[in-house]
Length: 64
Image 1 (cartoon, rainbow, N blue to C red):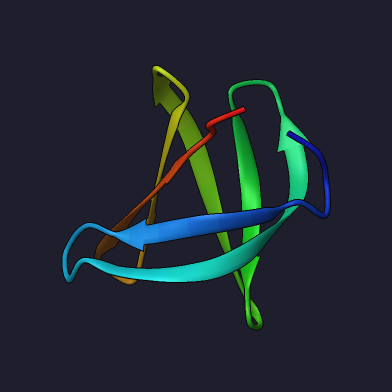
Image 2 (cartoon, rainbow, N blue to C red):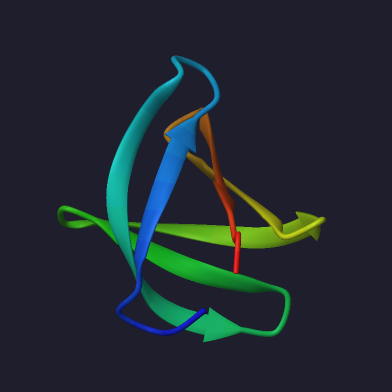
């Protein structure tokens, strides 16, 4: 996983998938930019990252 890598982010509340870009990596998490919005995502388990924004839950799975 690299900064600038495309990430498919899924909203678990409405099952929509959107493309984002990884803009920051840190221990136990990452930040993904979608349009002009940044979602802070925390590593949960098995390469699954989870973030919350505006009352919605988003997930990203690192398949690499």
